[in-house]
Length: 219
Image 1 (cartoon, rainbow, N blue to C red):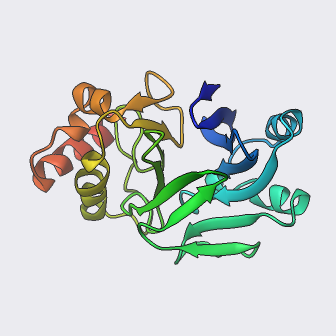
Image 2 (cartoon, one colour):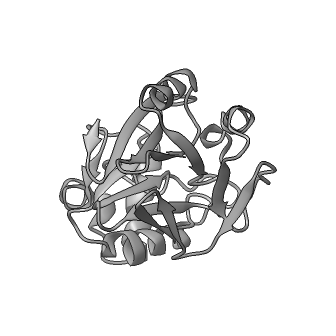
């Protein structure tokens, strides 16, 4: 468990090495889950062990594997609020609050900026804490590569803009917490990701398309 002004606990499981993150404020014990993608038992145990107050669930995008356990949490915690992009591809019925690009959320005494990052999926968002130097990237950016663009609403042009005009413009010491354990480590700084991967060294959309096409051919 990493200790900053947030506490961050990482859980792996779900459909395909998914990550769910439980974050909470040290002072207020207000807690949030980033992507309810992992079996809930250990998450619930951690919430109870630390006397946390689960207030929010933040959804990086509505691919089914990332919201698989959403209803379970909503039943257990009927007063929590679910946050996601204002036009979710899959409608979220439970306690949903729509987010706009650059909107700010509070997690106790801490704040998160919501960044709209379409490309992998039309409703993709990343959740950035500037003061804690962390970002939860869902399937937009992994360790060593970006997300794929194989869904019906995917767009390589939008993904290129989200990566190069948004995420790579953040401070390079920002630590990436991705949506899946697909890399050579669980998390990575933006600086190290650029250094270690051709996905983040492209000088143009055409070059980015070439890197993405090579990746798909060699999967």
